[in-house]
Image 1 (cartoon, rainbow, N blue to C red):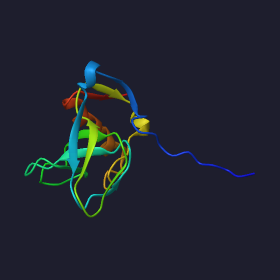
Image 2: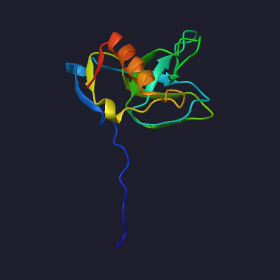
Image 3: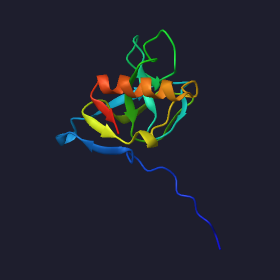
Length: 123
């Protein structure tokens, strides 16, 4: 018998969001970010306003969690436009993906707190 493994679905981490698409926005993932999985916590780069997976530390603005991408994209060699949750939503924290340097529970709590600042509440 063949065994199938089902991957993550777009937006499966969303528990609730504001009416009329108010929680979502079109953003750009910066070239060089690589493959960005569904539900990745993103930070906004101050210069240029593009997004990248939010690291534990940094100085370009991306170290602050600000959004969560809705679809998997490959931004290895070019900028990629994608829809993201950027405000007014509740999400399942167990389905979020964090950048590799965010590997301690306390760092994930910090990222979740940063998301709360923009109105994205983790449950």
